[in-house]
Length: 418
Length: 162
Image (cartoon, rainbow over all chains, first blue to last red; front, side, top):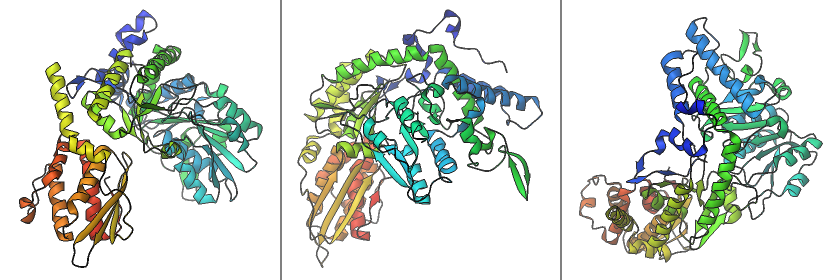
């Protein structure tokens, strides 16, 4: 299982963050005749050579099914697959590798918890508590399980800055609340929620907490034990890994008590027509042949992030976000949406009465990729009474030049519409 | 470089022509039509454009009033506004033929021939043709037209561009 050669800089100590951009081959291209400026990492982050090479190496040399064959390739594939599980455990500080379940993504992980953990527990009159800033993936799975069980979905409010009102959220935690499901970082607004305090308050009332960490994982150091989260979910493709792979972290005792979510191969010990014995954790929740190359890619992405260092990434992004916010301030008639004091490097905005979609087209024409629309957070848009926003999101590979190009492209947009 | 920048600006101005910006800023026939006989909603879930189109069609098929409400980008609002300007005074059959011709033109497809579309002069609707160079925006320009088609044919069916 010799890993393919690492990036050539490995021997020269910690990577300088400025040098990281060169690790992402996709960024070195032109779009519509201009060098690409990629400011849509909150939708999907780009992939470094380390990930591309690991997947290619797995497919070229080690591809086989996992946990099955006695042959060498199957062993190698299994070692890579389980090695990535160890990487995830280390990366998020989980107590045990059996607490790491591979899923298709954050959405899949939340659906798993809604159906396997909550559905059997919920009765009419029970409540599921979320907040107003959640992504649709942390709303709809709960609506479905509430419909199935007669439970009620309760939504805690946010304030004008786009931050959750902690006191009101805690006020909602009455004795009928069976789970609190909250984002760690808002995808549309960038707000970092005070999840430690929310978890503490929930636990003091014996309510478990699921954290949607999809937008936190590429920006912040995550320690699930320090946070105390009962469930923590995230996706590979927001953290420089592939799409179609994600993680459900759950405390072992919870997973142990939960019934399987899907049945099939790999999740069983013994199958007979008069009954089936389920496999041990975490395999009980991994039915069918998994996304092995996706797992390998995710493992490589974690290796890359560890090499660059999450502290360095966070510091870089705090600096860039401050530059972005002040640079956007120079645009005529701009309105920043999402101004919480504690934020990740995501900024939504509107300019005058120009529709976000028009901003997106004019920027794309100048080689600048941003997200426009409702960001799968329609209730957030309703809260502000707007149809959508333009959103620039920054990752470790962005720099000041990207922000200058964004501002120049926005200035051109204003010009076209004036 | 500055030549490239100029041609880029020119391409953008081709999409956002003065007439489009004018209709986007001051949409004509904007609002509800309380005595509409036909209506349909057009939704573009990708970008959140949402338009409701209203038509009053007389017994002889004449469209004697058209209005719309909702919100969307400059292209979709201008297109809806231009649509209302255009179809008032047409018969519903003429409007359906016109719809086919517009969609054919916006998507750059050869016009489906059952004869009539070919000869249709799109008039000021030609201003929308700039979207052909911006594939992601064709849906915006065609949204109101699909709603027109749905309103006449199906009465009140919402249409989605997805």
